[in-house]
Length: 111
Image 1 (cartoon, rainbow, N blue to C red):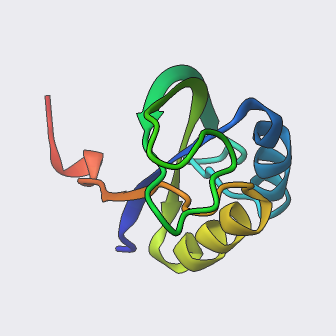
Image 2 (image 1 turned 180 degrees about the vertical axis):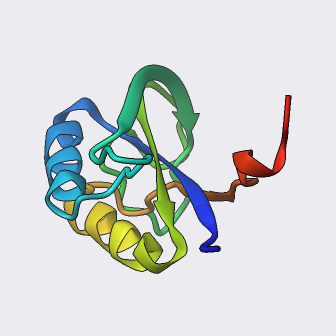
């Protein structure tokens, strides 16, 4: 049985469509007989660019607060590298926050 992962990525609104479309083109977000199963929601985030950073938004040494989106979806272990690559190629941030979380197989739990 192939391992399944949940991918979460934080991004600005202007990048949401391009990243979503890149993932759709790869047929990612498969759940059973469906693909392109992605979710996104608006979140509030903070960060402080440190010396040497080239921030997309904000100024060196100042804490920035802004609205972002968190996009999440599931993918198999064999799709993981192409998913991360598609996100990085379409993301404007210097440092992209991508969380990859292993998921338990739901079928092993019975009600």
